Image (cartoon, rainbow, N blue to C red; front, top):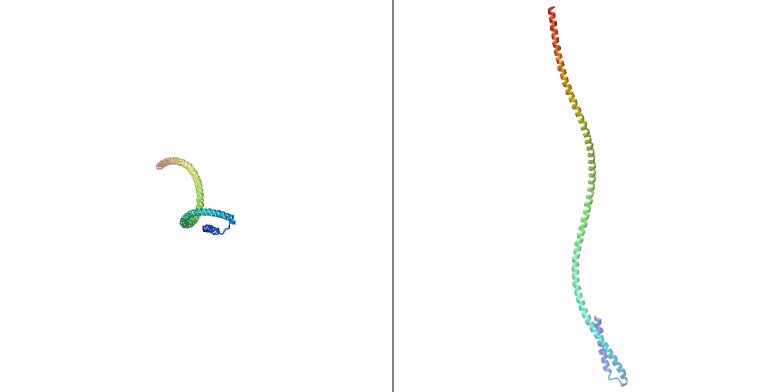
Length: 213
């Protein structure tokens, strides 16, 4: 913008100097140089018109630049305000990032601790599964043994029932034999008593016969 001002000032000064030089040299021109003067005047007029046009264009450009400068100033103020807000938000985000980074470190530590806990729990789970497998195998073995024992008990129970039946039959037979034995004893006792009586009678007969002799 400063360069444009200098150019405009140079154009104005050049125009004024040319005009003064033309005025100062006009009385000194001879009649023979009138045509040259006319050409110079035309050239000067053209130069002046061009300078004025350039000046107007420069003024328009300056006005446009002033407007643009004003807009740029407003935009700059807006950008500065936005930059301040951005810096403030950046500060907030930076604090949030630091807090998040600290939280992330804590979460990583918690995750590492959790991973260790999970590894320990997995080890305990594996041990428990192995123990459970052993218990299950023992349980199956116990069930098989119990089933075998039940089958053996069923067999023994069947045999016991058979033996009980046989024992009942034996008891019945013994009861019958005992009753028969008792009857036999009674019969023998009766016969013994009869024999004893017979002996007594025979002794009495013998005694009577002896007394008679």
